[in-house]
Length: 166
Image 1 (cartoon, rainbow, N blue to C red):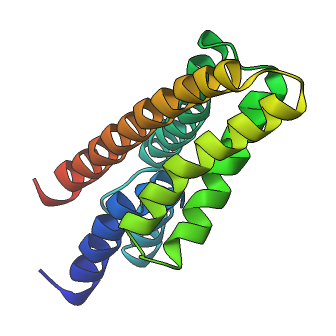
Image 2: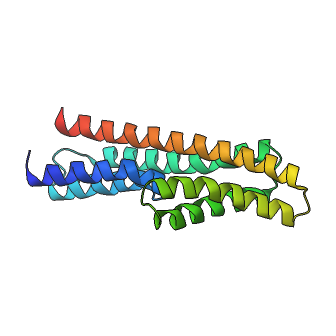
Image 3: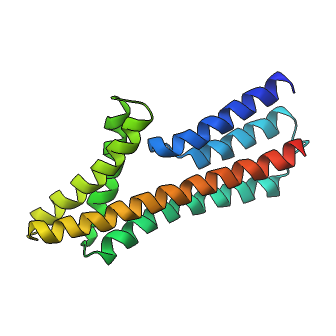
């Protein structure tokens, strides 16, 4: 294994962790795969293969937010509450990252979803019980979305590694 392959594997490993830091790790896999293709003159990866990896990355990223929205709406959140959950989750992950790069981002993202949903729902006139219930749905959606995102990232890395190394 040469230097290029080692760098490629390190970036793929980073992409797996980055999903929990509110960094779109699936796009990092795509960009890393594209970079490897350019460096190796596309000996291993075709344009169609890159399009497939890109489609998976887009699909998984969208699915994460759809799952958050579904969970929040299922538990009574308004559209604005869903937006508050998503923005709160991203903001919480970013601010939590400064306390602890991995765990702070994960915990901050989960707390951010709750705070974002509850605060918007309270501003919209819901009582604390209704707002908390909506936040529970958003939190469950966030956990489900992160799970799907992690599974998608692992799947992409396995597909790329299989194409490259086997």
